[in-house]
Length: 382
Image (cartoon, rainbow, N blue to C red; front, side, top):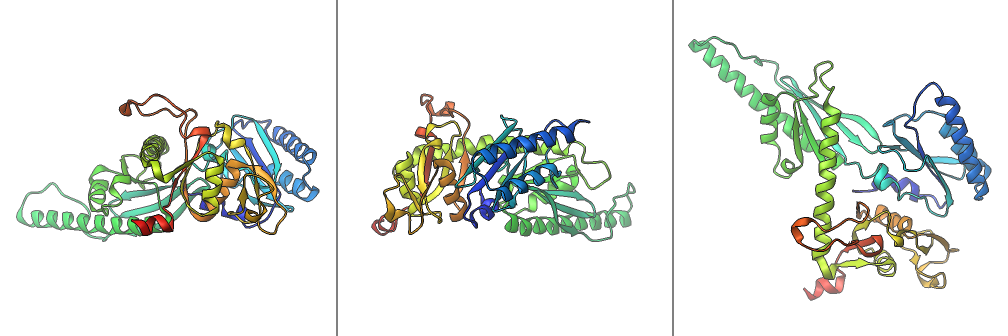
């Protein structure tokens, strides 16, 4: 996953209030429960040293309903009296409330609760064109429309010469429209970098679109009969998309872990090696196993993403600022988000795939690892 949506969190120095909260129980007592949760969160933040302005901002955010929600939970990140990011969560947190006051925003839980959700480009296709929609960890938005030719669009059951000519015109129109829709999907994908492309609609209309997609998109494309543009046709679409997303996550995790295992000389494991790689901007893909012991190790950070050190005394790496302690996972995720590195969250104790015949093991060791860009010297030697 790409964490570019987190970059607003790294444009401000902090310290940060980070709140992950379960909102899955919605009933007649929701308002009372919400206020109790908000007060408990704010009391916890105050005890940890949060300033009054930031505590008030968090309280007001928690008391107001989020603009977009999956019905599972939400996260709130605030500093200096302002809520900077308030994303919905796709999965309910294991803890009803988790509130922290820390030097860096505590974003690691988002890997499993929100950020790991693949970006999905949905095309609602019918004989007149397609509506395009993007679903991201932050919600859903319409992104465009592809319109086909007005005439002719319907086949007939007659079999004389003129009708056969008309049938060919219908087929030509469908062929043209499919190409127009495929082109619109390709343009939208260049803008949003979707992990999945979902073609929704009747098979006679979505299949020609699939066949005309650029080769780079076809491996990411899935089809569903649900969700055409007709009123009420999207009843089962969400279930189809969720199945496609989960399959994508499982397949991606296995493929990326295989890459990590086979890379050997282009990997890093352990906090000291990863800190050094982050300082040199060499992390291409960061692997995080949330239950790994290294995720909670203390490192020292400055204001910039590449200002990291294992020890506070390593001042040459921390710039001219006053270094502060931070969790290793949050420090490395800041570096990944700002430098554009990919991030792969792994299930707890992710074992080797059965086809590898390797023994089950915690990979990467300690729960943190990375695939690395080759250094300038290594590229020169090659």
